[in-house]
Image (cartoon, rainbow, N blue to C red):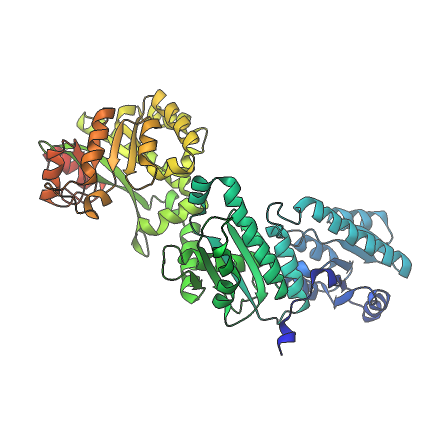
Length: 564
C-alpha cells in the first residue's frame, strides 16, 4: 500500500502534452505519433481544454491546439492561458488546416510559439515539439536558477514547479507540506556572525537533502532561515522531524538552535502550491513562543484566521477611502503638576458591519505584508488635519506623536513626504512628533540612524518608543539621535516597579538625564506608579490612570477643561 504514495524522481518524469482538437481522428493520430515519448492528455473542445489545463497546471510541458472548435475556439484558449502567470509560459503549437498568413500571424500574436498545418508530418511534429519543450525548459533553468547556492536545496520557484509535476502524475497522492523554521535566527547572526549562522543553515539543509529525499520528498529554502518540504503523508511527522534533526544538537561545530515545525497533513493538492506553503508556514508561526511545543498542525481554525486576515487586507483600500479608520488620542500629562502636555495618535477601525476592529488584529498583519505604510500615511494626514483644525478653532497648537513603522524607515522619500505634509496644513513641525520603535533599530541601525538624522535636520521631534523592550537598548542610546525617550510600559507593569523599589527604571532615568533627554512613561495605571515617577523626576506620563485613547471630539474637552 505504501508504494502507492511514493513520489517519482523528477528525472524520471515523462513530459506531458495536451492535444486539443474536436476531431477524434485527429486526436488519435497525434496520440499515435507522440505516445512513445510523452504522456498524452486530450480535450475535445476549448472549454474542456481549459478545465484540463486548470487541473494539471504546472504539469504540462506543451499544448497542441486546434484553432477551429465549438464552444471556445483556439484563440479563446490562448487568451485565457496567457492571462495566468503559472500558465503563460507553457509552449503552445497551433494546429490548423488554414494556411493563410493572416491566421498564422493572429495565432502567433495571441501567444502561440509555433504553427503547424494539416495534414500532419510525424517527424516535423516530433522535432518541433521536442525543440520547443527543450527551449522552454532551458530558459526556465537559466531564469530561475534551480538550486539555492548556500544550501543546495531547490529554490522556491523550482520547488513549486516540481511539486506541480508530481501532483499532475498522481493527483490522488496523499502528501504533507512541512515548514521548518529556525527560532531567533536573526539573533544568532548578531551573536555568532554570518559564517557560523550559515554553518547551521548548511547542516540543516544537508540533513533535509539526505533524509527527506530518502523518503521520496523534495524541499526548498523558502526564506533566509525557513525550509519547505513536500513529502508523502506519515502519521508520525513530528517524531520523524525530531528524529532527523535531533543529532544536530550534539554537534559542536554549529550554534545551539531550536526549530519550529508547521505541518499541513493530507494537503489539498487542488490548491496552488504557494497556498499550501503558506498554510504550513502559518502553522510554524503559531509555534513561535510556545517553549513547550515546537510543532503546530494546520487546521480549520487557522484557515478561518487566514480568511479573516485576507478580508482585512482586501478591505483596507475601501476603509481608507470611506474614512472607516479613525484617529483616537491618548493624553500625555506632566508628572509634576499633572497638566495636559500632549497626545499620542492611535488608529481605530470602525467597520460598518463588524464594529470596532482591534488594532492588534490589523496592524501586525499590515506590518507583515508591507501595507502598513499606506495606513501610516493616512494617520499622519488625519493628525495634521486635527492640528490644523485646533489651530483655526482654538487659536492654539498642541503636540501629537504619530508612529513610524519599520517599513516607513526604508522609504527614501519619507523626510520629503512629511515635510510636504506639514506645509500643506501649515502647522509647526514641533507639534508633529515622530515615534520610532526600538525594534526598528535592531533590524537595520544604519538605515534608521540615517533617516532620523534627515528628519531631525528638517526640524521634526523624534521620540524613541518602547524603550527597554529589546536587547540592544543601551548600545542604541549611544548612537541614536533622539529628542524624547518613551519607556516601555512593561517596565512599569511586569517588573512591579514601585516608589520604594523602582528597579531598572531608576537606571534608565539616570541615563536619560545624562543624555539630557526628557522621558515619557507609558502604561501608567496607579497613583503609586505616578508617585514613583515623580520621585525619579520623570517628566511626562500617559496611561489608563489618566485616560484611555479617546475620539477627536472627546479629546477636545480634555484640553478645553484641562481635565485630570
